[in-house]
Length: 118
Ligand SMILES: [Zn+2]
Image (cartoon, rainbow, N blue to C red; front, top):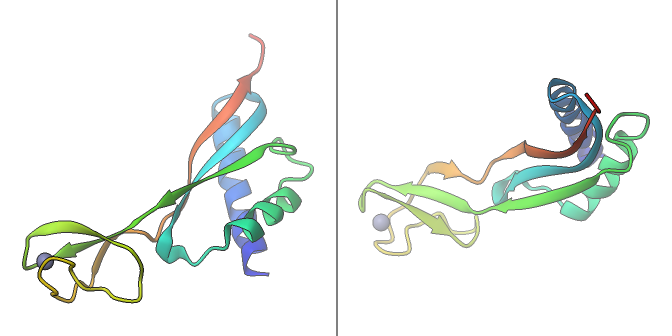
């Protein structure tokens, strides 16, 4: 149950963020998930439902933002977006690009909340 432990980490992050923003209720949790994170979104959503039970996040929606894979090409001297991890080569010059700049993310990007009445 890899996704469940990940979901528990996400719930912890989001509960802290909700407390800081004095949320009365959390409507949605926006999560940035990189292509390289190896996460199966469907499994993560159901694990999130389990992990968020009995917290302020109960009943909230998990919005997954897909983060593409971006590597640095040392030959072209620019960041290039790759369609997948099977081939870590620059599509322009075919240089092997080992430096991953984006795509490993698994982080809470934002919360959609209802604020407590002042
Ligand atoms: Zn290149």
